[in-house]
Length: 635
Image 1: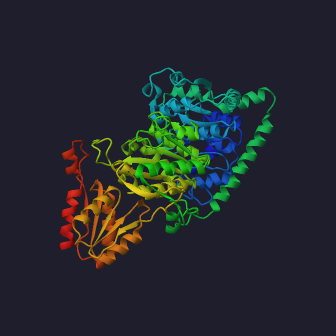
Image 2: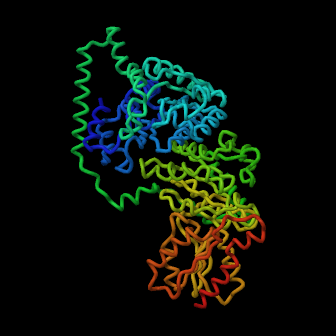
Image 3: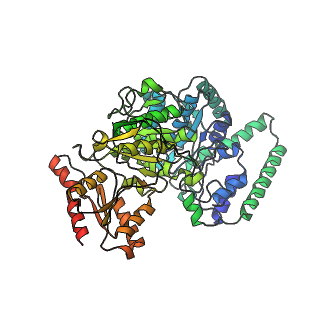
């Protein structure tokens, strides 16, 4: 009845879009009834029955669909693209596939907590063609995670029939390849759905493991209403109409003398009044007020965290790589729930040996080797955060983050802004040139992420900063990409406190002070700048190590340029589209009257990074920086 009302409102222009689940209600309702109220469910955009069965107030659903403040996303997202910790429902993003990984992360949290809970995740058959589906099933099977993968086989993915989507007889058959149980259920029979899922859920609570369930059903409306159903043969529509789960269940109840026609009408009347009452409440609510301040303040979660400063401490002169390892180890000791995940990080210690020995200290349940599946591991990390478990994910090389790009920029980055769910995930990014590793292992690709609101991007240049910034990143409730320059791992030695300490994110550091020019840089660029200045003692320069690229310490940048009147920005990344371009624009907008020369940017060539030593040296900007600095000082 809610669906029918929404279709009327859609035609009246009172809601913007509707994804109908008419004909599939038994799956949503049956699964939700089979799970306990404190167990998470991850529905899709046509699973209204999940929300109503969890008794979410209807006016809040209606205001969500109208983009009003009483909804769940402050008007920032529509439809069922929201979650609610109160009702243990985690909404989807339009990319479908990451939902499987998020469910696996929640299941991992349940397993680590040993709380005997199961979670269920929904998808249509279309989503099972995505790589995230296969990655999630594989990891869930390898780790024996207590999750029900519930696939609604709709017959069509929008307009594409199943014969053009996959070439096996049943989606459930795929379970065999991943070493997991799988079942086929009549998705239009509420009693079969409820009884079978209840049985499986109870079994998984006792013996944690994943199960793949294929529900045979049919989508009676368009993918969304504008799509229509003209592509579906009429006889197929008639067949599935005869299997309508609500009408058949009503007939069954009447035949069994459980439901009478008068009671049926009475229930409908009560529901109709409830719908109308809640709609009127939703319609009376004013349109949401736009506020730039509120929008910007909700991109990141602000949280008072204790800043661990040291008054007295013991120093050790260690390498940057050792400082990172020490920061990780001390963070693991302070937080008994913190989990580290990545390829070969357990007994092998990671390809750079940063986590060597960690398994003996913390156990394999917290130091988790992963298959090669960056996308789903990042989604799993998000699922852990939903359950208040922090995690650190190691990209073996920063270049490989491209395989996990979608969950980084669409799940992690947008989570707090969309529905105030923190994504407390640190992604470690070994990056950079100088090791002759070529186009797939030497990129410094921070600009991929500084563009995306909701991500923090940290890039230390020395051992002291690496440890203190990493511990702060782990404490931060927002997603942090933590870039670690491979060329500095074993070449940068520095006095680093033995004790645990933190350094505030978002603060640049002044490495050197001068009067002639401001050099603004980060990462390996800081070392290049200092080396060049040693060769030219006549140049008096401020050297600013940004350390944090997002958020950016604009105050320090502006102050130094207002003082010196000249600015050169050095980055290892290729020049076009990098952070230097944004800083240059900032200076032109905010410091124009203080400038005595054009702002100069120096970066690597606009080519992929090459392998051969002489080609790599030509690619990198170090030598070009020296000449550009001399020219700008003389301007």
